Length: 78
DNA sequence: TTTCTGACA
DNA sequence: TGTCAGTA
Image (cartoon, rainbow, N blue to C red; front, side, top):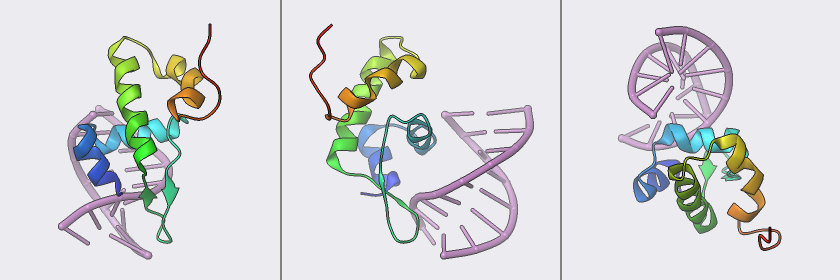
């Protein structure tokens, strides 16, 4: 889906979506024209980022969970 | 019409 | 975060 769709579905501004990517929290695919192409995984990622964010975490802190947030890697076990 | 990048406040 | 410019 396009950034505009994800923006409405997650209630997150396009500005922040691009920001999350710049911080390495999102890894959207690119279309031939250079547009960001988001999948359902990214949609879930944004939800989790919003959760951690509302918990008072800073992007620098959240970035450490990037692997988990993307649903990749191992399960978090402190 | 919508999205892209980089920069400023 | 919002917004501006010139493109694709």
